[in-house]
Length: 227
Ligand code: ADP
Ligand code: MG
Image (cartoon, rainbow, N blue to C red):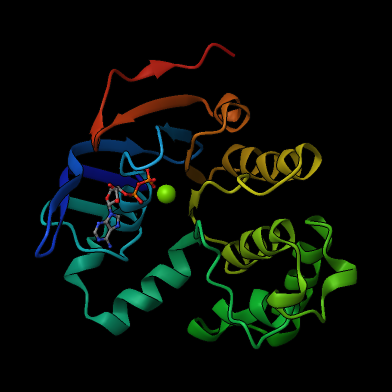
């Protein structure tokens, strides 16, 4: 099992309001599975993904990634575990503004040991795969949002993660680039990886083997995809 959420809940509370963003969500994803979570804006998709990715501790419930509870680790150990195991594609990309495309894609290598030449070759391959070869030296401010999104995708894949958590990864892409990204995710799952993609894009949902509908932080009936 690569990802297991057991009764995970996360509530945001401040002086003015309480939002039950994720409410008692359980799901499991094994090797080779491509699961989409679909739901309206504000239904808790990003919160769910952050809790699954070891980036936001749930208030209650259990998260296991590749057999490990990331929240049981120290901050340093968790960062290293995440870098080795999880490829996270943020909805807002979170690229480093003063690093160019190649440097951004290479950034996760800092957290893990590996051959510098091999890592660089892999970064260049990913950059090519996502159609960014002629943008390598550009900093994020000089990229279109679609190019930023593809850079974030390449970065997430650098360390050969076992699990990809992707937050609306086609949100800023035209059809052709969306197909490239979705094709990559499908290949990744076909090669034994696991993918959890959250989206409100029907085209992205169509690529997944199963779809989970999220409503107000809760899972509605799971349904098999028609394709
Ligand atoms: P989605 O990704 O499906 O659009 P989010 O997980 O971003 O949904 O948000 C779920 C709900 O939680 C929304 O109502 C949102 O306003 C609220 N929310 C998200 N992040 C925060 C936060 N940091 N503080 C307070 N409320 C938040
Ligand atoms: Mg979101």
